[in-house]
Length: 499
Image (cartoon, rainbow, N blue to C red; front, side, top):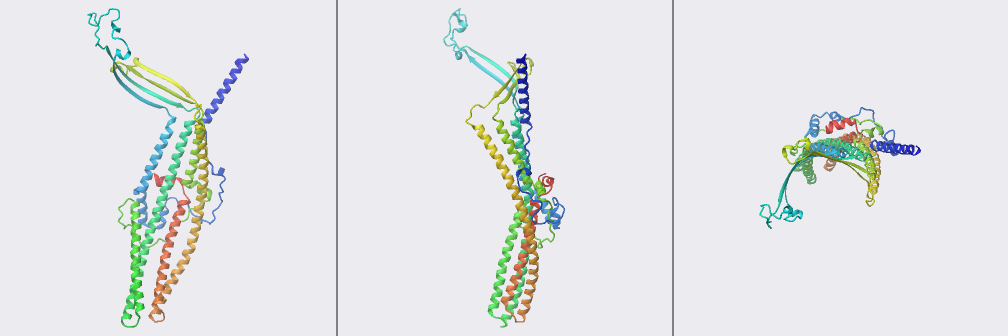
Protein backbone atom coordinates (compact mmCIF):
# COMPACT_ATOMS: atom_id res chain seq x y z
CA UNK A 1 0.00 0.00 0.00
CA UNK A 2 2.82 2.36 0.90
CA UNK A 3 4.56 1.56 -2.37
CA UNK A 4 1.42 2.46 -4.34
CA UNK A 5 1.04 5.73 -2.41
CA UNK A 6 4.70 6.60 -3.07
CA UNK A 7 4.30 5.95 -6.78
CA UNK A 8 1.16 8.10 -6.81
CA UNK A 9 2.96 10.98 -5.07
CA UNK A 10 5.93 10.77 -7.42
CA UNK A 11 3.74 10.65 -10.53
CA UNK A 12 1.58 13.56 -9.35
CA UNK A 13 4.64 15.69 -8.56
CA UNK A 14 6.16 14.82 -11.92
CA UNK A 15 2.92 15.84 -13.62
CA UNK A 16 2.84 19.16 -11.76
CA UNK A 17 6.51 19.75 -12.62
CA UNK A 18 5.94 19.10 -16.32
CA UNK A 19 2.79 21.23 -16.30
CA UNK A 20 4.70 24.10 -14.66
CA UNK A 21 7.45 23.88 -17.26
CA UNK A 22 4.82 23.87 -19.99
CA UNK A 23 3.13 27.04 -18.78
CA UNK A 24 6.44 28.77 -18.07
CA UNK A 25 7.63 27.91 -21.56
CA UNK A 26 4.46 29.09 -23.25
CA UNK A 27 3.60 32.20 -21.26
CA UNK A 28 6.89 33.93 -20.58
CA UNK A 29 6.90 37.74 -20.76
CA UNK A 30 9.93 39.77 -21.71
CA UNK A 31 8.72 43.36 -21.48
CA UNK A 32 11.38 46.05 -21.11
CA UNK A 33 10.97 49.15 -18.96
CA UNK A 34 13.23 52.16 -19.34
CA UNK A 35 13.09 52.64 -15.56
CA UNK A 36 14.93 49.32 -15.13
CA UNK A 37 17.88 50.35 -17.32
CA UNK A 38 19.41 52.84 -14.88
CA UNK A 39 19.36 55.62 -17.49
CA UNK A 40 19.33 59.19 -16.12
CA UNK A 41 16.09 60.85 -17.26
CA UNK A 42 15.84 64.54 -16.25
CA UNK A 43 12.57 66.11 -15.17
CA UNK A 44 13.01 69.10 -17.50
CA UNK A 45 15.11 70.08 -20.49
CA UNK A 46 18.19 72.23 -20.08
CA UNK A 47 16.53 74.96 -22.18
CA UNK A 48 13.00 76.05 -21.31
CA UNK A 49 10.38 75.27 -23.98
CA UNK A 50 7.46 77.71 -24.23
CA UNK A 51 4.08 76.17 -23.51
CA UNK A 52 2.32 75.11 -26.71
CA UNK A 53 0.22 72.33 -28.13
CA UNK A 54 2.01 69.28 -29.44
CA UNK A 55 2.58 69.61 -33.17
CA UNK A 56 2.22 66.19 -34.75
CA UNK A 57 0.14 66.67 -37.85
CA UNK A 58 -0.27 70.13 -39.40
CA UNK A 59 3.05 71.78 -38.55
CA UNK A 60 3.48 72.64 -42.25
CA UNK A 61 0.44 74.95 -42.17
CA UNK A 62 2.32 77.48 -40.03
CA UNK A 63 4.46 78.46 -43.03
CA UNK A 64 1.41 79.80 -44.91
CA UNK A 65 2.75 78.48 -48.21
CA UNK A 66 0.25 76.69 -50.45
CA UNK A 67 2.97 75.57 -52.84
CA UNK A 68 4.88 74.04 -49.94
CA UNK A 69 1.73 72.22 -48.79
CA UNK A 70 1.27 70.84 -52.30
CA UNK A 71 4.90 69.78 -52.46
CA UNK A 72 4.69 67.99 -49.11
CA UNK A 73 1.53 66.19 -50.18
CA UNK A 74 3.25 65.05 -53.39
CA UNK A 75 6.21 63.93 -51.32
CA UNK A 76 3.95 61.70 -49.22
CA UNK A 77 2.10 60.20 -52.16
CA UNK A 78 4.60 60.15 -55.04
CA UNK A 79 8.06 59.92 -53.49
CA UNK A 80 9.98 56.79 -54.59
CA UNK A 81 11.60 56.78 -51.14
CA UNK A 82 8.23 56.70 -49.37
CA UNK A 83 6.94 54.02 -51.75
CA UNK A 84 10.06 51.98 -50.98
CA UNK A 85 9.16 52.21 -47.30
CA UNK A 86 5.71 50.79 -48.07
CA UNK A 87 7.30 47.75 -49.72
CA UNK A 88 9.85 47.35 -46.93
CA UNK A 89 6.98 47.33 -44.44
CA UNK A 90 5.20 44.60 -46.40
CA UNK A 91 8.42 42.58 -46.58
CA UNK A 92 8.93 42.91 -42.82
CA UNK A 93 5.38 41.73 -42.15
CA UNK A 94 5.59 38.66 -44.37
CA UNK A 95 9.08 37.83 -43.06
CA UNK A 96 7.62 37.83 -39.55
CA UNK A 97 4.87 35.46 -40.69
CA UNK A 98 7.45 33.13 -42.23
CA UNK A 99 9.63 33.13 -39.12
CA UNK A 100 6.66 32.59 -36.82
CA UNK A 101 4.95 29.86 -38.84
CA UNK A 102 7.00 26.98 -37.40
CA UNK A 103 4.67 26.79 -34.39
CA UNK A 104 1.90 25.41 -36.61
CA UNK A 105 1.68 21.90 -38.08
CA UNK A 106 2.91 21.37 -41.63
CA UNK A 107 0.37 19.52 -43.78
CA UNK A 108 1.19 18.54 -47.35
CA UNK A 109 -0.92 16.80 -49.95
CA UNK A 110 0.56 14.20 -52.28
CA UNK A 111 -0.68 12.15 -55.21
CA UNK A 112 1.12 9.37 -57.03
CA UNK A 113 0.68 7.11 -60.05
CA UNK A 114 3.33 4.38 -60.29
CA UNK A 115 3.81 1.80 -63.04
CA UNK A 116 6.57 -0.80 -62.81
CA UNK A 117 7.76 -3.78 -64.89
CA UNK A 118 9.98 -6.40 -63.20
CA UNK A 119 11.58 -9.73 -64.24
CA UNK A 120 12.61 -12.72 -62.15
CA UNK A 121 16.20 -12.44 -63.21
CA UNK A 122 16.45 -9.27 -61.20
CA UNK A 123 15.50 -11.24 -58.08
CA UNK A 124 18.13 -13.99 -58.66
CA UNK A 125 15.70 -16.81 -59.57
CA UNK A 126 16.74 -19.51 -62.06
CA UNK A 127 14.95 -19.72 -65.38
CA UNK A 128 13.52 -23.12 -64.42
CA UNK A 129 11.95 -21.78 -61.19
CA UNK A 130 8.41 -21.79 -62.55
CA UNK A 131 8.88 -25.21 -64.27
CA UNK A 132 10.20 -27.07 -61.24
CA UNK A 133 8.69 -30.57 -60.92
CA UNK A 134 7.76 -31.18 -64.56
CA UNK A 135 10.89 -30.14 -66.44
CA UNK A 136 8.77 -28.55 -69.17
CA UNK A 137 8.62 -25.04 -70.46
CA UNK A 138 5.47 -23.02 -70.71
CA UNK A 139 4.61 -24.46 -74.10
CA UNK A 140 4.36 -27.99 -72.69
CA UNK A 141 7.16 -29.33 -74.87
CA UNK A 142 9.23 -30.37 -71.85
CA UNK A 143 11.99 -27.99 -72.86
CA UNK A 144 12.99 -24.71 -71.24
CA UNK A 145 14.21 -21.99 -73.50
CA UNK A 146 17.50 -20.56 -72.36
CA UNK A 147 16.53 -17.12 -73.76
CA UNK A 148 13.11 -16.84 -72.09
CA UNK A 149 12.73 -14.01 -69.46
CA UNK A 150 9.80 -14.08 -67.07
CA UNK A 151 8.34 -10.56 -66.57
CA UNK A 152 5.42 -9.09 -64.62
CA UNK A 153 3.97 -5.59 -64.08
CA UNK A 154 2.29 -3.57 -61.33
CA UNK A 155 0.30 -0.31 -61.10
CA UNK A 156 -0.39 1.73 -57.99
CA UNK A 157 -2.32 4.95 -57.45
CA UNK A 158 -2.37 6.91 -54.23
CA UNK A 159 -3.68 10.11 -52.66
CA UNK A 160 -2.74 11.28 -49.20
CA UNK A 161 -2.00 13.95 -46.62
CA UNK A 162 1.27 14.12 -44.69
CA UNK A 163 1.48 15.76 -41.27
CA UNK A 164 4.52 16.94 -39.35
CA UNK A 165 4.13 18.94 -36.16
CA UNK A 166 6.63 19.77 -33.46
CA UNK A 167 4.74 19.83 -30.18
CA UNK A 168 6.02 22.95 -28.46
CA UNK A 169 5.74 21.89 -24.82
CA UNK A 170 8.75 24.01 -23.77
CA UNK A 171 7.75 27.17 -25.62
CA UNK A 172 10.78 27.11 -27.92
CA UNK A 173 8.80 27.79 -31.08
CA UNK A 174 6.51 30.23 -29.31
CA UNK A 175 9.49 32.31 -28.21
CA UNK A 176 10.78 32.29 -31.77
CA UNK A 177 7.37 33.43 -33.00
CA UNK A 178 7.22 36.24 -30.45
CA UNK A 179 10.74 37.33 -31.39
CA UNK A 180 9.77 37.42 -35.06
CA UNK A 181 6.78 39.67 -34.41
CA UNK A 182 8.78 41.90 -32.08
CA UNK A 183 11.24 42.31 -34.94
CA UNK A 184 8.34 43.22 -37.24
CA UNK A 185 7.00 45.83 -34.82
CA UNK A 186 10.51 47.26 -34.45
CA UNK A 187 10.83 47.43 -38.23
CA UNK A 188 7.49 49.25 -38.39
CA UNK A 189 8.68 51.90 -35.97
CA UNK A 190 12.01 52.21 -37.78
CA UNK A 191 10.23 52.68 -41.09
CA UNK A 192 7.73 55.17 -39.68
CA UNK A 193 10.54 57.26 -38.18
CA UNK A 194 12.46 57.04 -41.44
CA UNK A 195 9.34 58.11 -43.33
CA UNK A 196 8.86 61.13 -41.10
CA UNK A 197 12.58 61.91 -41.47
CA UNK A 198 12.14 61.89 -45.25
CA UNK A 199 9.31 64.42 -44.94
CA UNK A 200 11.37 66.65 -42.68
CA UNK A 201 14.38 66.40 -44.98
CA UNK A 202 12.17 67.24 -47.96
CA UNK A 203 10.79 70.26 -46.11
CA UNK A 204 14.28 71.43 -45.19
CA UNK A 205 15.43 71.03 -48.77
CA UNK A 206 12.40 73.00 -49.97
CA UNK A 207 13.34 75.95 -47.78
CA UNK A 208 16.94 75.65 -48.92
CA UNK A 209 15.49 76.22 -52.38
CA UNK A 210 13.59 79.24 -51.08
CA UNK A 211 16.82 80.59 -49.62
CA UNK A 212 18.71 79.98 -52.88
CA UNK A 213 16.01 81.87 -54.80
CA UNK A 214 16.27 84.74 -52.32
CA UNK A 215 20.07 84.69 -52.56
CA UNK A 216 19.79 84.85 -56.35
CA UNK A 217 17.45 87.83 -56.11
CA UNK A 218 19.92 89.49 -53.73
CA UNK A 219 22.81 88.85 -56.14
CA UNK A 220 20.82 90.36 -59.01
CA UNK A 221 19.93 93.39 -56.89
CA UNK A 222 23.60 93.80 -55.99
CA UNK A 223 24.52 93.56 -59.67
CA UNK A 224 22.02 96.28 -60.58
CA UNK A 225 23.36 98.64 -57.91
CA UNK A 226 26.95 97.96 -58.99
CA UNK A 227 26.06 98.65 -62.63
CA UNK A 228 24.49 101.91 -61.52
CA UNK A 229 27.67 102.86 -59.65
CA UNK A 230 29.84 101.75 -62.59
CA UNK A 231 27.85 103.88 -65.05
CA UNK A 232 28.10 106.90 -62.76
CA UNK A 233 31.86 106.46 -62.35
CA UNK A 234 32.30 105.88 -66.08
CA UNK A 235 30.45 109.08 -66.90
CA UNK A 236 32.60 111.09 -64.51
CA UNK A 237 35.75 109.31 -65.66
CA UNK A 238 35.04 110.27 -69.26
CA UNK A 239 34.62 113.86 -68.11
CA UNK A 240 37.92 113.70 -66.28
CA UNK A 241 36.28 114.01 -62.85
CA UNK A 242 37.32 110.53 -61.64
CA UNK A 243 40.51 108.54 -61.99
CA UNK A 244 40.94 105.37 -63.98
CA UNK A 245 41.39 103.52 -60.67
CA UNK A 246 37.79 104.23 -59.68
CA UNK A 247 36.54 103.11 -63.07
CA UNK A 248 38.53 99.86 -62.96
CA UNK A 249 37.34 99.11 -59.41
CA UNK A 250 33.73 99.61 -60.52
CA UNK A 251 34.16 97.34 -63.56
CA UNK A 252 35.79 94.67 -61.38
CA UNK A 253 32.87 94.74 -58.95
CA UNK A 254 30.36 94.35 -61.81
CA UNK A 255 32.30 91.41 -63.27
CA UNK A 256 32.53 89.57 -59.94
CA UNK A 257 28.82 90.12 -59.31
CA UNK A 258 28.06 88.31 -62.59
CA UNK A 259 30.04 85.32 -61.30
CA UNK A 260 28.04 85.41 -58.06
CA UNK A 261 24.75 85.44 -59.99
CA UNK A 262 25.74 82.39 -62.03
CA UNK A 263 26.80 80.51 -58.91
CA UNK A 264 23.46 81.30 -57.27
CA UNK A 265 21.61 80.12 -60.37
CA UNK A 266 23.49 76.83 -60.34
CA UNK A 267 22.77 76.32 -56.64
CA UNK A 268 19.06 76.94 -57.16
CA UNK A 269 18.91 74.57 -60.14
CA UNK A 270 20.70 71.84 -58.17
CA UNK A 271 18.34 72.10 -55.20
CA UNK A 272 15.27 72.22 -57.45
CA UNK A 273 16.36 69.06 -59.22
CA UNK A 274 16.86 67.30 -55.89
CA UNK A 275 13.37 68.37 -54.83
CA UNK A 276 11.83 67.14 -58.07
CA UNK A 277 13.56 63.77 -57.79
CA UNK A 278 12.23 63.41 -54.24
CA UNK A 279 8.64 63.63 -55.49
CA UNK A 280 9.24 61.46 -58.54
CA UNK A 281 9.13 64.24 -61.15
CA UNK A 282 11.44 65.01 -64.05
CA UNK A 283 14.40 67.08 -62.76
CA UNK A 284 13.76 70.25 -64.77
CA UNK A 285 15.11 72.48 -61.99
CA UNK A 286 12.12 74.84 -61.89
CA UNK A 287 10.10 73.78 -58.83
CA UNK A 288 10.94 76.59 -56.36
CA UNK A 289 10.90 80.19 -57.57
CA UNK A 290 9.59 82.09 -54.53
CA UNK A 291 12.19 84.61 -53.36
CA UNK A 292 10.89 85.40 -49.88
CA UNK A 293 11.63 83.45 -46.71
CA UNK A 294 8.66 82.68 -44.41
CA UNK A 295 8.24 84.70 -41.23
CA UNK A 296 6.10 82.21 -39.29
CA UNK A 297 7.59 79.06 -37.78
CA UNK A 298 5.72 76.18 -36.13
CA UNK A 299 6.03 76.20 -32.32
CA UNK A 300 8.37 73.81 -30.56
CA UNK A 301 6.47 70.67 -29.44
CA UNK A 302 6.16 70.63 -25.65
CA UNK A 303 6.93 67.61 -23.49
CA UNK A 304 9.12 66.40 -20.65
CA UNK A 305 12.01 64.02 -21.43
CA UNK A 306 10.22 60.89 -20.18
CA UNK A 307 7.18 61.63 -22.36
CA UNK A 308 9.35 62.23 -25.43
CA UNK A 309 10.87 58.76 -25.11
CA UNK A 310 7.41 57.26 -25.36
CA UNK A 311 6.62 59.30 -28.47
CA UNK A 312 9.74 58.60 -30.50
CA UNK A 313 9.37 55.62 -32.85
CA UNK A 314 13.12 54.97 -32.96
CA UNK A 315 13.23 54.51 -29.18
CA UNK A 316 10.17 52.25 -29.31
CA UNK A 317 11.99 50.24 -31.96
CA UNK A 318 15.06 49.81 -29.74
CA UNK A 319 12.85 48.66 -26.84
CA UNK A 320 11.19 46.06 -29.06
CA UNK A 321 14.60 44.85 -30.26
CA UNK A 322 15.60 44.24 -26.64
CA UNK A 323 12.40 42.24 -26.09
CA UNK A 324 13.05 40.29 -29.28
CA UNK A 325 16.59 39.46 -28.16
CA UNK A 326 15.19 38.28 -24.82
CA UNK A 327 12.81 35.89 -26.60
CA UNK A 328 15.63 34.56 -28.77
CA UNK A 329 17.78 33.92 -25.69
CA UNK A 330 14.87 31.99 -24.15
CA UNK A 331 14.46 30.05 -27.38
CA UNK A 332 18.16 29.13 -27.42
CA UNK A 333 17.94 27.79 -23.85
CA UNK A 334 14.96 25.63 -24.77
CA UNK A 335 16.93 24.10 -27.63
CA UNK A 336 18.77 22.16 -24.90
CA UNK A 337 15.56 20.30 -24.02
CA UNK A 338 14.14 17.25 -25.84
CA UNK A 339 11.96 17.85 -28.88
CA UNK A 340 8.75 15.99 -29.63
CA UNK A 341 7.56 15.69 -33.21
CA UNK A 342 4.29 14.18 -34.38
CA UNK A 343 4.45 12.54 -37.81
CA UNK A 344 1.50 11.08 -39.63
CA UNK A 345 -0.04 10.39 -42.98
CA UNK A 346 -3.44 9.30 -44.27
CA UNK A 347 -4.73 8.48 -47.73
CA UNK A 348 -5.53 5.69 -50.16
CA UNK A 349 -3.52 3.18 -52.17
CA UNK A 350 -5.07 1.14 -54.99
CA UNK A 351 -4.31 -0.51 -58.32
CA UNK A 352 -7.33 1.08 -59.98
CA UNK A 353 -7.37 4.84 -60.63
CA UNK A 354 -11.15 5.02 -60.23
CA UNK A 355 -10.83 3.60 -56.69
CA UNK A 356 -8.45 6.30 -55.49
CA UNK A 357 -11.21 8.04 -53.48
CA UNK A 358 -12.63 4.81 -52.07
CA UNK A 359 -12.23 4.71 -48.30
CA UNK A 360 -12.00 0.93 -48.39
CA UNK A 361 -8.50 1.37 -49.78
CA UNK A 362 -7.49 3.77 -47.02
CA UNK A 363 -4.10 3.67 -45.31
CA UNK A 364 -2.65 5.74 -42.46
CA UNK A 365 0.34 6.00 -40.18
CA UNK A 366 0.92 7.95 -36.97
CA UNK A 367 4.12 8.22 -35.01
CA UNK A 368 5.76 10.23 -32.25
CA UNK A 369 9.45 11.07 -32.35
CA UNK A 370 11.37 12.25 -29.30
CA UNK A 371 14.86 13.62 -29.91
CA UNK A 372 17.23 14.93 -27.27
CA UNK A 373 20.66 16.47 -27.78
CA UNK A 374 23.41 14.19 -26.48
CA UNK A 375 26.62 15.46 -28.02
CA UNK A 376 27.06 18.31 -30.52
CA UNK A 377 30.41 19.80 -29.63
CA UNK A 378 28.82 22.26 -27.16
CA UNK A 379 27.15 24.01 -30.10
CA UNK A 380 23.80 24.54 -28.37
CA UNK A 381 25.31 25.97 -25.20
CA UNK A 382 27.48 28.28 -27.29
CA UNK A 383 24.32 29.40 -29.11
CA UNK A 384 22.79 30.27 -25.72
CA UNK A 385 25.83 32.39 -24.88
CA UNK A 386 25.58 34.15 -28.24
CA UNK A 387 21.91 35.04 -27.70
CA UNK A 388 22.56 36.19 -24.14
CA UNK A 389 25.35 38.44 -25.41
CA UNK A 390 23.02 39.72 -28.14
CA UNK A 391 20.42 40.54 -25.47
CA UNK A 392 22.95 42.51 -23.41
CA UNK A 393 24.18 44.28 -26.53
CA UNK A 394 20.64 45.31 -27.46
CA UNK A 395 20.17 46.79 -23.98
CA UNK A 396 23.32 48.86 -24.39
CA UNK A 397 22.13 50.00 -27.81
CA UNK A 398 18.86 51.09 -26.20
CA UNK A 399 20.73 53.06 -23.53
CA UNK A 400 22.92 54.66 -26.19
CA UNK A 401 19.83 55.48 -28.27
CA UNK A 402 18.10 57.13 -25.30
CA UNK A 403 21.14 59.21 -24.40
CA UNK A 404 21.63 60.08 -28.07
CA UNK A 405 18.01 61.24 -28.29
CA UNK A 406 18.47 63.45 -25.23
CA UNK A 407 21.68 64.86 -26.73
CA UNK A 408 19.95 65.65 -30.05
CA UNK A 409 17.11 67.45 -28.31
CA UNK A 410 19.29 69.43 -25.94
CA UNK A 411 21.61 70.48 -28.77
CA UNK A 412 18.75 71.56 -31.03
CA UNK A 413 17.07 73.47 -28.19
CA UNK A 414 20.35 75.24 -27.48
CA UNK A 415 20.80 75.99 -31.19
CA UNK A 416 17.25 77.32 -31.35
CA UNK A 417 17.97 79.78 -28.56
CA UNK A 418 21.31 80.76 -30.12
CA UNK A 419 19.76 81.28 -33.55
CA UNK A 420 17.16 83.63 -32.09
CA UNK A 421 19.92 85.75 -30.54
CA UNK A 422 21.90 85.78 -33.79
CA UNK A 423 18.83 86.74 -35.83
CA UNK A 424 18.12 89.70 -33.55
CA UNK A 425 21.74 90.84 -33.90
CA UNK A 426 21.76 90.44 -37.68
CA UNK A 427 18.52 92.38 -38.08
CA UNK A 428 20.25 95.28 -36.37
CA UNK A 429 23.32 94.77 -38.55
CA UNK A 430 21.20 94.78 -41.74
CA UNK A 431 19.65 98.11 -40.82
CA UNK A 432 22.95 99.70 -39.83
CA UNK A 433 24.82 98.44 -42.90
CA UNK A 434 22.07 99.75 -45.16
CA UNK A 435 22.34 103.19 -43.55
CA UNK A 436 26.13 103.05 -43.88
CA UNK A 437 25.88 102.16 -47.58
CA UNK A 438 23.44 105.00 -48.24
CA UNK A 439 25.65 107.44 -46.36
CA UNK A 440 28.79 106.34 -48.23
CA UNK A 441 27.08 106.96 -51.59
CA UNK A 442 26.02 110.43 -50.50
CA UNK A 443 29.55 111.24 -49.29
CA UNK A 444 31.01 109.91 -52.55
CA UNK A 445 28.70 112.12 -54.58
CA UNK A 446 29.98 115.09 -52.56
CA UNK A 447 33.57 114.02 -53.10
CA UNK A 448 34.14 113.47 -49.37
CA UNK A 449 34.98 109.73 -49.54
CA UNK A 450 36.48 107.28 -52.04
CA UNK A 451 34.79 104.80 -54.34
CA UNK A 452 36.51 101.99 -52.47
CA UNK A 453 34.61 103.00 -49.33
CA UNK A 454 31.32 102.86 -51.27
CA UNK A 455 32.10 99.43 -52.71
CA UNK A 456 33.16 98.09 -49.31
CA UNK A 457 30.00 99.34 -47.62
CA UNK A 458 27.87 97.91 -50.44
CA UNK A 459 29.68 94.58 -50.17
CA UNK A 460 29.25 94.52 -46.41
CA UNK A 461 25.55 95.35 -46.71
CA UNK A 462 24.93 92.52 -49.17
CA UNK A 463 27.05 90.06 -47.18
CA UNK A 464 25.07 90.76 -44.02
CA UNK A 465 21.77 90.37 -45.88
CA UNK A 466 23.01 87.09 -47.33
CA UNK A 467 24.00 85.89 -43.85
CA UNK A 468 20.59 86.91 -42.58
CA UNK A 469 18.88 84.79 -45.24
CA UNK A 470 21.10 81.82 -44.40
CA UNK A 471 20.42 82.24 -40.69
CA UNK A 472 16.67 82.35 -41.24
CA UNK A 473 16.88 79.15 -43.25
CA UNK A 474 18.99 77.55 -40.49
CA UNK A 475 16.32 78.54 -37.98
CA UNK A 476 13.72 76.74 -40.12
CA UNK A 477 15.95 73.66 -40.40
CA UNK A 478 16.49 73.65 -36.66
CA UNK A 479 12.78 74.00 -35.92
CA UNK A 480 11.88 71.14 -38.28
CA UNK A 481 14.56 68.96 -36.71
CA UNK A 482 13.11 69.75 -33.29
CA UNK A 483 9.67 68.64 -34.44
CA UNK A 484 11.26 65.37 -35.56
CA UNK A 485 13.38 64.61 -32.48
CA UNK A 486 10.77 65.69 -29.93
CA UNK A 487 8.37 63.15 -31.40
CA UNK A 488 4.61 63.16 -31.34
CA UNK A 489 1.58 60.93 -31.20
CA UNK A 490 2.51 57.40 -32.36
CA UNK A 491 -0.66 57.17 -34.41
CA UNK A 492 0.41 60.26 -36.33
CA UNK A 493 3.53 58.54 -37.60
CA UNK A 494 1.74 55.40 -38.74
CA UNK A 495 -1.36 57.00 -40.25
CA UNK A 496 0.40 59.88 -41.97
CA UNK A 497 3.61 58.20 -43.08
CA UNK A 498 2.97 54.53 -43.71
CA UNK A 499 -0.76 53.99 -44.07
